[in-house]
Amino acid sequence: MAILENRVIKNRIYDVPRTCSWSPRDRSWDEVDTIVVHQTDSSCRDPETQIVDTANYHISKGWCSIGYHIYIDQNGEIYQVNNLKDRGAHAGNANDYSIGIVICGDHRLRDGATNEEIIPKKQYKALIWTIAHIQNAYPQFKKILGHTTLAPKSRTCPNLHISELVADVKKKRIIKLLTTWVFLGLLFGFIISIGRKILYYN
Ligand SMILES: [Zn+2]
Image 1 (cartoon, rainbow, N blue to C red):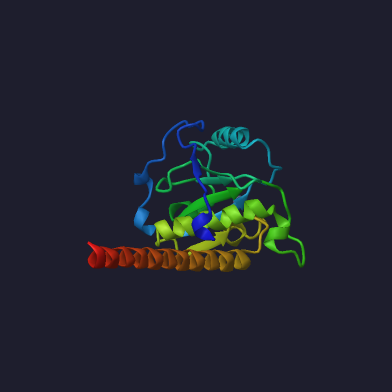
Image 2 (cartoon, helix red, strand yellow; image 1 turned 60 degrees about the horizontal axis):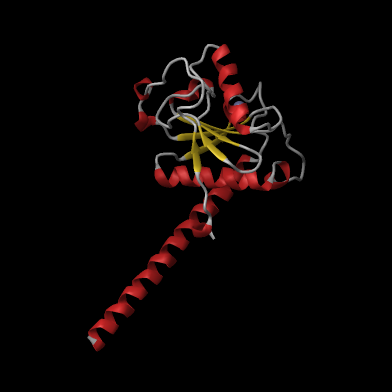
């Protein structure tokens, strides 16, 4: 049940190495409508170390800091490493209108394997939750793409079935909506029943 899913996004925005700030002025937030999913292309390590190392690597390429906005480790822990409104450096020209979510790992697509069989279940659930969470908070994010869609020749990143991911996110959002309505219905019923008691016995 979505309502019982107690996830937190750990804020590491102010902890990652940074040589300059990516100002929201670098792009128009109104035009940001795409979530791009990546994999690190390297095995998962201690997430805090891997995030810092990735930031230093990206700085060595001349970027301000880690290029992604969200990092998800193999246990499903979620780390935010940049403000969503800031322009990242993860998908070429698409940086202007997208945010980047990276999952750690150097997994590969396998014929007949579902996403849950390609990466750890906990990590996949966290990815679905994160995208649904962002889309609920910011309905402007209409598109979910794999990096490979934007750079098909050079990359296979993120090596997940994107159509399956999109369908799973949609399911997650519907379940969340239904859960919210059921909760509100129960709450309303409870308030009415209390109200009736007060009316009859006071
Ligand atoms: Zn990528």
